Length: 154
Image 1 (cartoon, rainbow, N blue to C red):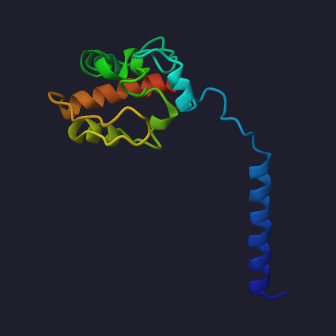
Image 2: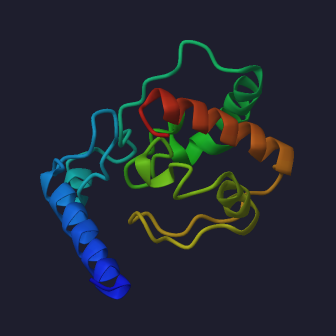
């Protein structure tokens, strides 16, 4: 058999293996991950109610503790206590939508600096936030990431 035939056969077998693996995976997300609430589920929540349940770590790093204080002072008015979101106001940041592989730490910097056009949630655009330095946002992001990890979002 020639080399091209072996290559084509190998690619076919690998593709078949991937297809079988995909078909055998569970349809549900792994335990500990949060799913985006259906829009109808948001309708069942009272205005301003938390959108997700959030578990807090037993202890935050010193940097995250600073970030928690900054978050509570500036961000919680919209994103809710412990970043659980507020129905009709702003989304939860303790949600797989904001996991590091989808929204990097720099995405948080850009959101604060430039605002964000609504695209994941039905709450409208986020305006730029005045008065936070790059270091402030780094601490806030550290807090969000530690709470995300506690909730199975890595």
